[in-house]
Image (tube, rainbow, N blue to C red; front, side):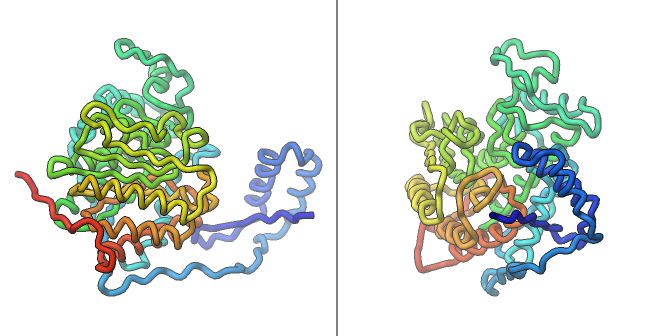
Amino acid sequence: MDVPHLVFDDLGSGVPLGPSNLRKIVRAILERKYEKLCPPDYVDRVVKSIRDDPIQLRPPKYGPPKPIAAPKSQARAVALVVNDRHEIHHVRERGYVESPVRIKSILAGIEPTGLFFRVQPKPFAEAHIRAVHDRALLDYLKRACASVPPGQSLYPYVFPIRNQTKPPEDRAYAAGYYCIDTFTPLNRNAWHAARRAVDVTLTAAEMVLEGQPLAYSLVRPPGHHAEHRVFGGFCYFCNAAVAAHYFSRHGKVAILDVDYHHGNGQQDIFYSRSDVLTVSIHGHPRFAYPFFTGFAEEKGKDAGEGFNLNLPLGEKVHGEAYRRALRKALRAIREYDPVFLVVSLGLDTGKADPTGTWSLVAKDFEANGRLIGEMRLPTLVVQEGGYRTGQLGTNAAAFFSGLVAGSQSTSKPGSANKRPRRRS
């Protein structure tokens, strides 16, 4: 018979695993995931058998991944701006995977590469958010978040038909009027963390405008599921869309969304515009969130007709199959001939991500990054999903290693290198 194994990751804390914590963990797993297979007396026996203090762990079968060292020509090639206030948005409810450890895990992987230099975020006017989001949504989020008691969260649970003239007055009921799901919470700090994520993204965008070829906005909460007048999918403001609109004053913009889930926020915001091309590679909406957008026939409307491209893929996707879709996406972007590229980077396409079904590994992220880098466009990368914390850093480091190598390569010229003209 198969022997179960429990894998423990201390996330670099160095704190040993004690029996009390392990008993709680084992009981939770057996009772919540295997309750149909494990009767209560069996669970009690297993839990009581845990006696070692500290818990004895097997030696690692594999050593820690070696950091990717950047060649001297690539050193400090990417401006890195991090949301310095993301930790205030820490929702500790069971099953909420959008946690602060995501940022720590990514930083642990990318900083040893030598590819990045830090830039401190600075504040930007709220008008940049209102340029892409409905005023009523912003006003509701600001009031609702401020009204939630400290340490508590408000989840949408009533979804009224959206009558534009009369939304519900009660803020709890109104949550479903402005939200697309039941698992994106409002709390005292959601507004502040999301607001700072916009500042971080615009700081990185400004670096690109000033001549920096590559910039990375490492933020949480993410943003690409926030539409013009609704939030959801752990997202409150569409950071990539705010940046794309900011860029659009200086030339055409393409958004490439490589998250496992459809970038419905960008699509909705720019669906009737031709100055921003939106491209998304994602799991087909018949099985992947958000389920109601991301179909191939959605191509834009009015002035935006033909400027939205969805490339939905099946449940099982390996690296080469993904790159076939990515090459198609990049051909469309090259034909559009933008001045700027915004990449919505989801690492949830990685193998064993709890929110995805695909099997990309580090070498795939490196290859994908290289293909994108070979476009040689001024590029802003905005962090979106990715929830398998043990692999986030490795995959992010691989992606940026490929992105920088591709942007500096001369063997496969993509789009001509462009410099935006700043308008006064």
